[in-house]
Length: 157
Picture 1 (cartoon, rainbow, N blue to C red):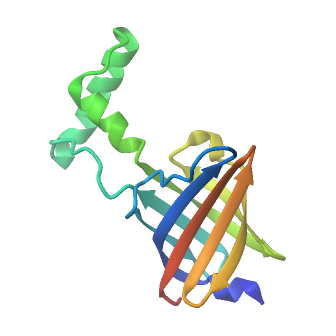
Picture 2: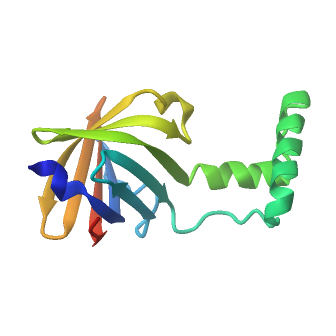
């Protein structure tokens, strides 16, 4: 059965986006980072990021207050300070979500419980899949845009 083949940890090897009439692009560059994890109990988690993201130049304890200050400035004055601009740019080069998953035919469906993108919460992300050697290729096509992510197995469950 296909579900057993998913179980384990997979490292992101490549992410290519192709839009009708445009050249293919790699939204997180030629060396994206990330993992997708599938458990035998039907839980999954995906984290992806560009290799290079702007540094925020702050310590962990100060992060919460800096974020709060940036949000307040944006809400009251409608401006980004240097920190909020770096934070925004860093966040646009990062993506994550998790939830449960199910497999049917040549499709895996990620049932999203939490996500960086709030619009995805409570939705199903349907991907076609293909296994080749130690790789898992997930593809999604929507409105003339084809996302193809290649993951290399790093660990079994």
